[in-house]
Image 1: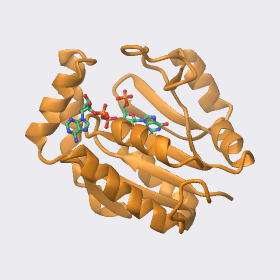
Image 2: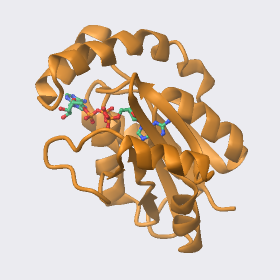
Image 3: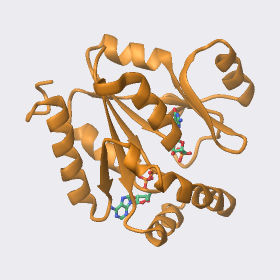
Image 4: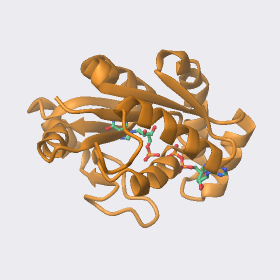
Length: 193
Ligand code: ADP
Ligand code: 5GP
């Protein structure tokens, strides 16, 4: 088994932004591309941010036991981690980076145990979270309402994660995350894992 870093948080807390910064620093990281039944957003591309599947194809893969975990994160929209992603990244000797919802994060942590570092990204406040979701400009009003409604319950789960990072100032949050990951991987140089 290799190592894994997993990021969870309600939508809009800044996981994607923080992961993007860290991917530039840690040469050993490879992002686990999840499958989803939602449509691409903005300039998202199939096989880069997600594998975009039809609902039927997604459920066929569930039946075929192709997922390590999957969730219907929002009503009618499924997301899941394909076992083939884990195999692909570990076969290359790299560290897997997961961006998954809070339930998925708890399941993956349970599965990988001490081989995974689970990080919860916390917004400075719910008001700031709402502002960020709106200013991202990628979601419909209906999607924003769904995401906010789910966030209250998700924020309560933070203590179940190994580390909580408050994403107030982005650079400060990235630096703190980098330090906890270096401790976990026991390396101070991004290329020595
Ligand atoms: P997530 O991946 O958790 O859904 P994103 O990374 O897409 O969240 O961030 C949501 C929005 O908030 C984006 O528009 C992003 O640019 C912005 N954002 C992220 N972190 C910060 C921060 N520390 N300060 C201000 N805006 C931020
Ligand atoms: P978005 O639609 O904003 O890209 O993602 C919505 C939510 O789905 C986010 O909280 C994201 O972390 C989560 N998510 C993405 N991929 C997976 C996955 O493979 N499994 C689970 N459980 N959640 C995921």
